[in-house]
Image 1: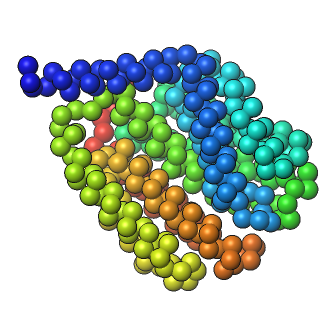
Image 2: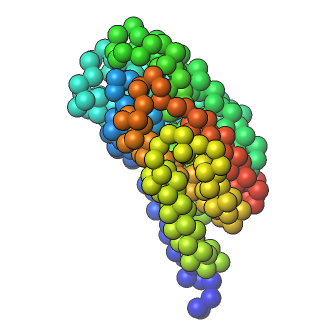
Image 3: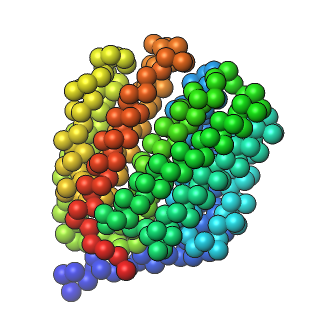
Length: 314
C-alpha cells in the first residue's frame, strides 16, 4: 500500500487536471491570450529605443506553443481570443492602430506558418524528446517561420514609418529576437506540457536535490557572466561558454525538459542584462549581435542533446 500506488495516483490526477484544463478551445484560448499579453509586456520592456523591435519578443512564441498544443480546428478561435490581448498591450504603449493591425498580421502569420509546418512534418503534435521532432522544431519553428515573417514585419514597420531604423536593421533584430524566443519559450512549454501530462514518478522525485543544486549553479554562473561582468568586449569569447557544462549536465541528466528549462533561465538572464547595459554602452546601430548568434548556436545544440534519452511517442 505504501509503494508506488500514491505516486501513480498523483500522476494520474495531474494528467487529468492538465487534460481538463485544455479540453475546451475557450480554456486554451484564455491561457494563450494571458500568456501573450504578459509576453508582450516583457517584450516592450526589452525594446531598445529608437528601434521599434524588442531584443526578445515572447508573444509570437507563446502563440506558436498554444497552436502546437491544440487541435488545428481550434486555431482560428485561439487567434480571435488573442486579438484583444494584442490590442490592449500595444495601445498601452502608444502604438498606432494601423501598426497594431499590421503587427497582429505578421505575428499570426509567423505562428501559423511554424505550427502548420511542424505539425505536418511531425504528423501531429510534436514531442521534443525525439531527435526527428526536435530537428523539425528547430528548422521550421526556430528558423523558417521567424526568417520569412521578419520580411513582412519589417516591411510593415517601414510602410507605417514607425521607428528610425532602416529595413535590414529591423529585419535582423526581429529575426534574432523571435528565433531566440521560439527556441527558449516554445521548447520549454511543449516539453514541460509532456512532463505534466505524464505526471511525476517516484524515481523522478529523488532527483529534486540534484536539480535544485544544478539550478543554483546555473543561475549563479549566468549572473556572474552576464550581469556582474560589464557588457561589451569582456563578455566575448571563452567567458560566454562558462554556463555550457551546466547546460550539458541538464540535458544529459534531465533530458529535454531539463535542457529547455536551463536554456530559458540562461536566456532570460543574459537578455535582461544586455537590455540594461547595451543601450548605455552602445549606439542602437552598434548593438552587437554576437550574443544572439552564440545563444542560437549553443542553445539549439543543447535542446538537440536533450532528446538523447527520450523515447518515441505514438
